[in-house]
Length: 249
Image (cartoon, rainbow, N blue to C red; front, side, top):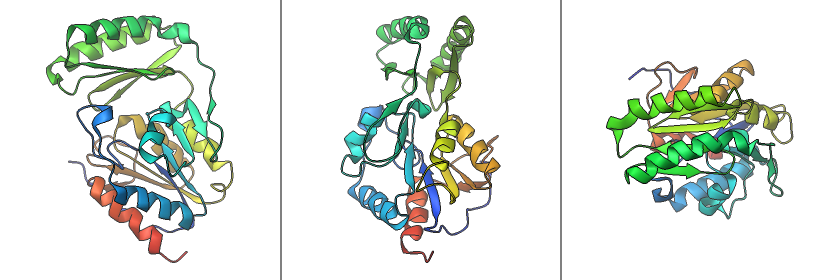
């Protein structure tokens, strides 16, 4: 495992942007099978108050899916890699998406999933992915198909290769653009930005954070990552964030 320095002690005068799966919660066999402990809900609630609301989720999940697990918090959030966002506790806004561009992806991934119960098609409306955690031996085949689909999409879609996941989203929006949007608005503006993520889908966010001279933190293996700091696992993320709740500003 590539080793990066541990991040410095957190401060409540920073702005926090947090990936969800693999960062705040452990990965599970399927997106619906995750477990969200009450201690995490309490931690995020306390950290949001301690930072005057400068805490946002930045996830590949849809915001409504995040709310199913954290509904009592109603946090600012960017969902589907920035294709939808909630800057405050009210309206979810969406980026315009050409649905016709997904037709080939939905058909090809759907055919694979129908033929192998170990594969899971996840259609979030504005992005479409295929999970293959239970069929790792099919990774090369699935990624080869995904690259063909990306070429056929004529620069309208981009492929995100995550942990046992091939996912497509429209070109031009990612976790980095989502974080930049938050950083330009209160209560995030003017604070040192921090982004914590765990896989390749978070690299755009790390690069934006680095440009802003913030703290980019990779969870787990940091090989070939743009992140400048590292935490070993999900419990370590909880412990590190917990320090911000009691730290002096």
